[in-house]
Length: 385
Image (tube, rainbow, N blue to C red; front, top):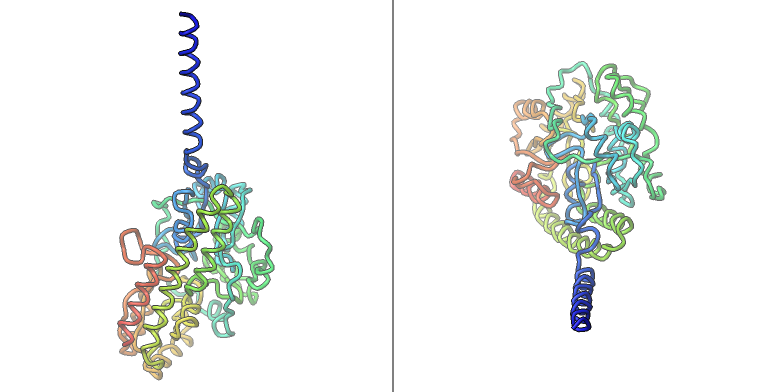
């Protein structure tokens, strides 16, 4: 009887052990239970990372939808999130000039992923580059820089330009080395622009100088493909167990980006070149213009807090009239005042809102990277035909 009892017990233990092994073999991967902790610098990168990472990554962003990265000021909460992150994804190209101060404050020791590595960098010509510095900082800047600084979106960590495990041969092109000290100066309220030696006094956002290269590379879907591949590579390196899943998701996403790229090129090509001219709030659409054959005339330079001098403003008015520019567009992160004034003085029609440096809020048409491009292309096509 004891033998039978012992036999039953042993058999029960064996069955339980087999069940445990079976569960272990069929259990979800590590990332499903402890996802990779990732912080992105702004909303566009956050959406691309979400497409590539899915539920294998825990994402948060610093500068959320409808918020201006040019006027971003880090908070202690952002520093805490950054300190807990494993990866921080940044645009690079001197877009996040405020990052070094934040990463230092957070004690961040993870990996910085520069999404723009490998893009063909668009350099500003002399007029474009100077435009950011020749404006009059005594103007009342009419811009609302309080966008979401309560961080109701799930802000994550921030970015540094130590650039982690990346070889930055590409950064030679990106000129990321020269203006990082601006971020530290911002906290004093007396940021200075080192480019061309100009000082802008107490304008807290004047230090947002991108240098000679245009950082808005995401405004070309071909570059969005590069961003997605760089992010997939970084996720795969940080989480090898899920590498194939990241690559599969990235491949699917890249296919959708490429299909949309082809569609937008065809739609805009159907409009006569002389009509493919628009005025925008600030100089954020250079890559879009090069890729899709549209001439963008920015009211101000790179910074959304910049305003043109009286001379520059008069030149824009003259150009709009002379070239019969059909439409003037607002941006979701910029003040409409100057664009509306140009429309009044030239008779050009207001063409709606474009998404430049930030996505729309959830539930709106421009709430994703693909949605942003679909929306912008539709606004342009409808206004220029």
